Amino acid sequence: QAAPSKPQEKAKQPASPPLPRQNAKITPPSPPKVISDKSGRFQLSRVGFLGEGGFARVYEVKDPRGARLACKVVTKESLKTKKAKTKLYAEIKIHRSLEHPNIVGFQECFEDNENVYMTLELCPSGSLMDMLRRRRRFTEPEARFFMVQLIGACHYMHTHQVIHRDLKLGNLFLDANMNVKVGDFGLAALIENPGERKKTICGTPNYIAPEVLFDTANGHSFEVDTWSIGVILYTLVIGRPPFQTSEVKAIYKRIRDNDYAFPSDRSISSNAQHLISQILTPDPQMRPILHDIVDHPFFTDGIVPAYIPTSAHDAPPDFR
Ligand code: ADP
Image (tube, rainbow, N blue to C red):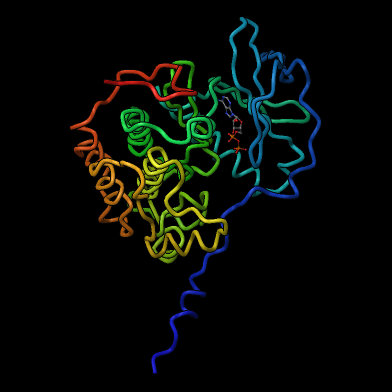
């Protein structure tokens, strides 16, 4: 009898991608009220707290001319290992090389004795994740608007040899005019040689492409961002990610089996369903490229609003 296929599956079972670290919860002291570097070239006053991620805390600050900025603060205490330093330098190198209307602008980077600081364009309206929580789901015209901007940013990154590798609603910030700003380059990778493949298992469980998890020998490349874009589109119009379950291992199993469905009790257009199912193609080589996505009837036959009113934070706008 044929051996059960389980052991092989086990062997390929990847280590879990980084989850929020439990031990990172010791709150470091706040940065000074007036943040400046050793030479005094940068002077920022801290005016508020914006949020925190795995590595950094982010504050709203004002520069000497009164301009409001976001300031990402990483304690030097957390940069003791070579790995942590390498990771932060990679993030800075990649983020500062990118300049696009739909990517969070990177301004400066400096340090004092305690911290490393990065000043970024301020996104005062939170992320698409925050907005989805209030709205439950988005209309298809809104989804088209956000997706066009996201795909534009992603195309720009890819032409600059950058894979973001952590595209998700929580990393898509909004400016005051409801424009998308892709942020958090903490997992981004630079492809330095054509054809180079990345091997590190990373990403956020719900958004990870199958080849990252299950083709670790071959590695992955730009197509992982395309996969995440498919997960994002599904999440925008349905209100939860396609492979969502309470357990990470079960999410990976559903990703491996391409096991997702469209809820029957809601009217998701057939164009949206068709496009999502094309993007969520397991074989990265068969996945549509970004140009194909924006050429799909979901975009070409539907309303793409010129802008989204700020009232959309709390209620669906009427685009008729
Ligand atoms: P990490 O790399 O540690 O995950 P993030 O870059 O995701 O940190 O930032 C953590 C939080 O800080 C975000 O979830 C968000 O709430 C807030 N934040 C980050 N960047 C900005 C920004 N440019 N404008 C406004 N808020 C921001």
